[in-house]
Length: 449
Image (tube, rainbow, N blue to C red):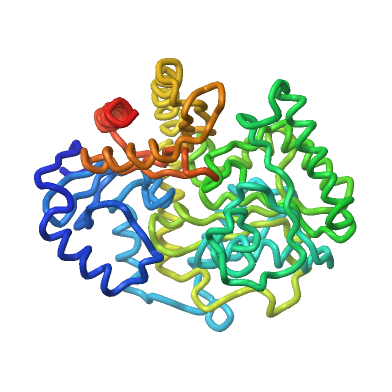
C-alpha cells in the first residue's frame, strides 16, 4: 500500500507526464503562484504521494500543515461520502444544518480560550479566520488598532497582508488599512548578543510597550495578534515567559490576545493547540483562529472566543456564504475524532523526539546549522554560513530543497531570510518512512554544503 511505501524515483524529474502538465500549468496559471517541485500528484495515502509518472515521494510539507492525519484517510473519505448523500451545502444565515452546530460544540469543548462559555464561527481559510478574529476584537472593544509582530504571516487578503510582516507578499497592492502597528517578535536565536534568555524576553516586552508610546496608545488597541510558533517567519516559538508577560500587558490595558493557530493547531504541537500550553501556564488567549488541518484538506477555518466577547459583535459583521460548509464540517468532526482516538498528540511528541535528536546531532557536526527549534512536531532548522556570524544561508537551503525532491523527499523553506527548513510531516508517518526521510535530508546537507 502507498501509505506504507518508501520514496522511489523511477524517472528523471519531472517525468514526461509531469512535464506535460507543468507546461500546461505555466500557460494556464499565474506565474506568481510559483512552485519549484518537479512533480504532479496522482494519488496520496498517509505521508506519501505518487506522481503521474509513478514516482513515490515522502511529504514533509503536508500541504503546509494541512495534512496532519495524512492523505486520503479512509475515515474522512467515508464521512464526506456520507454527507454528500444528504446535501453539499446549506447557508447558515438561511437554513441551519446540524453539522455546523455539532462542530461548533466540539470546538467550544477543546479550544482553550479564556472564559467558561465559548462560541465558534466558521470561515473558509486561515486568512479569513484571522480577519474575523480582528473584526470580533474591534467590535467587542470598540477600539480601532491592533498590534502584530516582525516575522508574522497572517494571510494575503488586504487586511491580513497588511498584518503580515514580509512585504514581498503585498508589494504594489496598497494603499493598506490603517491601525496596524508592529512590535518585534522574540526571535531568541537572533536576540542582542550576550543576553540571557530572560534578558532577551525583557528586551522584547519593552519593545512591545514602546508601541504604546510611539504608535498607538494602549487604550486604542483592540488586540495583540500572535502566532504561537511563527510559520513563514522561520518556525520561531513564542517563549512561554514572554507569552505570560504579553498576557499581563493585555490584561492591564483591556486588550484582547488573539492566537493565530492556523498552522500550529490540531495535534501538531503535541497538544491539540499550542494554546493548551499557554492555558496550563495561566496565559490562555481570548480568541483563537484555526484552519489548515481542521478538515483534512477541505476548506474550513474557525474562530473561537468566549460568549462574552463574541456576543458583542453586531449582526452582519461576521459570516459568509461558504463558512461552515456541510462537507467540510463533516470532515472536521472526523479529523478531531481521529486525532483523539489515535492519540496523534502523543505521536507528534514521539516523532519530535526522534527528529530533534537527529537535528541536534547535525547541529553539533555541521557548521552550517545554527539553530534547531520548535514545539512538538512543528520544527525548523536554521542554516547559516557559520555559527559565529549567523549569516543566513538561503542558497544552501534552496539547494537542499531541490536535492531532497530529486531523491523523493518534499521539504520547504521558511524564514525572513529564506534560510530555514520547516518540518510539517503528517503525523501518520511510519517510523521506517521517518528514518528514510532523515537519511535523505542528511544526504542533501552533505551533498550541498
